[in-house]
Image 1 (tube, rainbow, N blue to C red):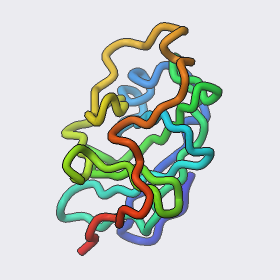
Image 2 (spheres, one colour):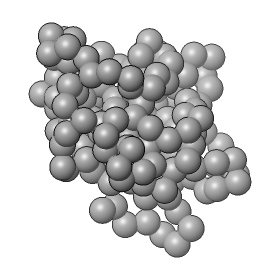
Image 3 (tube, rainbow, N blue to C red):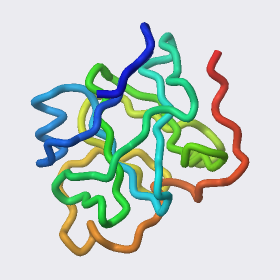
Image 4 (tube, rainbow, N blue to C red):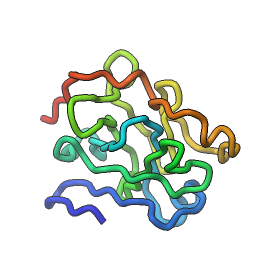
Length: 154
């Protein structure tokens, strides 16, 4: 588990592997998968507009061990067990932030298993084919832009 300051959200590695949809259904919260060429990826997030953000750069995402989303294909995974919804921005732990089109933050409206596809957060309803899961790595949304500032956290 990732330690969090009192009142801060937590994120957990998806060490157990398996189907991300089943993991979200049985363990609760949100399972988030992100494909990136970055060797290290973090997820800066908050659980709602009334909740605090994680401290930048956020929680480090680990290479995925989940079915259909292999770490060897550039997939990173994170489970946020206490999330009923999520507002977030992936980043490389430095100056590159992947923002939604128009420079906005990404938002997940409910629990479940989610991934970024062409700049949109998409709920995972079926596992990708083996070939799609290991296609060349690309970022989930708009190209991560160096120098973008993290969101306002107040």
